[in-house]
Length: 79
Image (cartoon, rainbow, N blue to C red):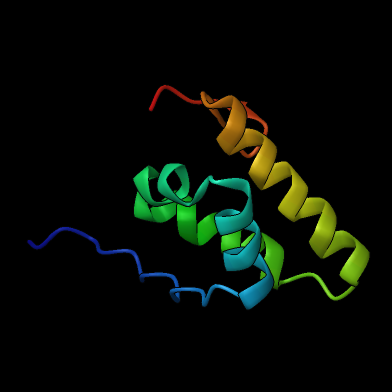
């Protein structure tokens, strides 16, 4: 019997404003060092909302978590 495979989530595209913020803040290297699932989750979290204000709020949290380290989506993370 073969193991059950979960469907893979779609890989999210990085919006230009996110790439620009990562570069401007000097956090792109820390972002790239995160596991692929985390990078995709952050992008999905930003991309799925409709209001620009909410997108910016999510972006700010992403940048803060990268700067602080040890945090992923508001939870402790040992990476």
